[in-house]
Amino acid sequence: MTNERWEPVIGYCTNVHAGTDLAQVHQNLQQHTLAVKQRVRPAGPMGIGLWLSHAACRDLFETGELTPFADWLAESELLPFTFNGFPYSNFHQPVVKHDVYLPDWTKGERLAYTLQLAEVQAALLATQPASTEFATISTLPLGWPRPATDLDGFQRACAKQLLQLSEQLDQLWQQSGVRTMVCLEPEPGCLLDTAADVARFFEQYLLKDANGSPERILRHIGVCHDVCHSSVMFESQETALQTYADFGIEVGKYQVSSAVEVNFDDCPDPGSAGALLAELGQFSEPRYLHQTTIRTSDGQQRFFEDLPLAFEQAGSEPAGTWRVHFHVPLFAEHLGAIGTTQADIGHCLQAIRPPADRPLHFELETYAWTVLPESLQVPLAVGIAQEIEWFDQALR
Image (cartoon, rainbow, N blue to C red; front, side, top):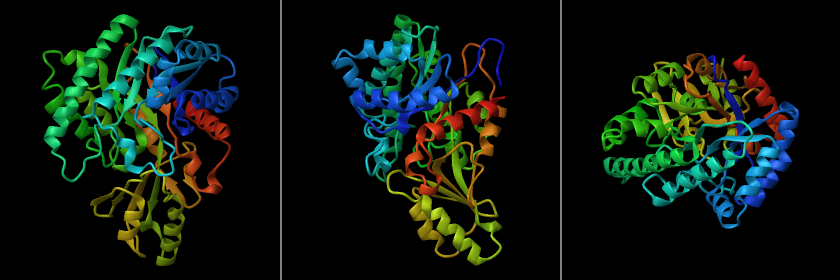
């Protein structure tokens, strides 16, 4: 896994904490993140995947709090090596669902927000005691397609914005010494939801319109490989990572996550299948979208953009293997009678080829702690610390 020069950098994603302004972000870090650090990294720096909404980003610039915030992170030994730039606004409102994909990558607001995140991150890393020359920001995989979307025109517009982004990030690299890579994060149901989709977009749109600078684009635009998302699509971890390598696309960061999995074909009778279906119903909650893929015994797959739609189709006689986009605790192989795709985390780790010129970035992203079934909830700091300890052991 590791190479001679670089050790992996590990952090948990702070999008699990509600808070859209800077004061709330700071309070969450003090209340939750420092408690996690005390449990798992009491001495020395601990990585974090920082989530800042566009409002919190604006606060940092407009209130003059950027330098004090950077100093506090350094003094607290919190290293914001990666940012989660996927959710633009309130990620904890009562209903998020499709709103998390707005604004999409055709919109100027998405470009402006991502550039601002890169500037903030470079400033925060400048105050860290250890030199940090590589930073990552994950972002949405272009957008969620609407029925009337001109997909070709949509992708061309996204590519144009990403080309502009790569130019700006190259300038920031020259100024700050930090190479920032913005990483498209394939997600079930989005325009890019598999590695093949990403490779096709790079080949047919992003690199085709590279204006003679494909190296610059590949230096600053990469992929965030989310293990859960890949699992929900029944995509082999090995195949996904090999696809990126074959097309020369860097995986800038890995989001370590696990999905819900239920195999109804293993149920001995309709009664047990019905009981299992009822237990799975605990994971159908109103805040987030829980995309579901069902694979039947003959290898056919059917995709549903949310779990309730899969329930409607299944009726009282569910069949096949269901994988649900619900980020569950990494250390859980089972959740009662419900299974998980935890094994795919190991498959991913085995398939990684560490780069020679930078560290591996791992972001633990179980953002759904607060919407888990009540019987599975634990104090946040306790659960997150347990995940970090589990992943440390998995790496070893």
